Image (tube, rainbow, N blue to C red):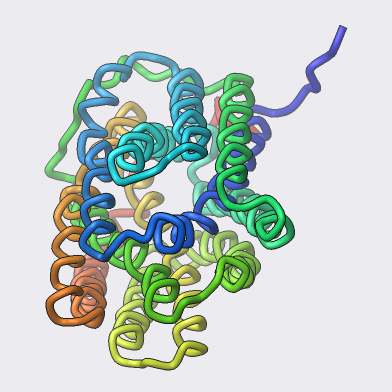
Length: 392
């Protein structure tokens, strides 16, 4: 009889996140070459695709409301299962309709998993180590992401892109089995089905701007390199590999810096740097510089851990965390259903610089809002997790 190894709850969560990161590393590395060179879609079609597949993000609160009383590990398993099914079916995509369909399936799983994984990490952590724990979880995903990128670089030339989508899907399904092993999550009273609190307005605002800015970069940065500069999948894999190496240290170190210096200082520095990255992408036509800016964007985006820990520290009730993260995910995607298709249209009409200038403006707005974080509010906030029940 096969014996399942004993491991702490956070260890099983980290293992599931590793499988998720590995699957996403493969998927993200090959996606833009697949749609740009295999399917040959235009910026307008890319904008439409991104807008449609971000609809599940907009509906996250509604989806989560249906399962709000279900244990987090079960919801996480269902999320990773949907992600895997969507990825596997990329194997036989032959046009925009099927691309949109299976992208939607994967997107539902992805957008369910993100708030669930953060919720589990916060509730399995003491309040004094939330930043470090979230950073550690992201570092695990970054290592896995790096492994996925390396796999693409090694075998994409021989296997082609489509079989790699199947591999990514199987890995996500394996992650679903792993997250079912998470035990010992502290119990709370029954959470509200949908939660919006005025006290959390700054969290919502920062999350909205993060989503708007991030979706500009995610939609158009690599697409610019593939479409306008004809970067092959091997080049994208190498770029992603370098980015992954940098991110592994960054996600953990940003968590530690947040614990030491607080959310306000770290977020202000990061948003200022991101504004400069977007300006560079809009104005500099040198491919090598664009590669560097791409890595810097991902590096400084790791600081958004501070937005999540800010919520964790100001939560007035432990039961607020999960529904508030879900609401935040929904707010994050309000702009996401408008920006990609609008950015694609503006790119076609005026050039690629327009969406990136918009991203710079959003980064400056985030900088201004993050300056409103009050340190005394964070320090005085009650713990969202009962430390006596938290996992070691």
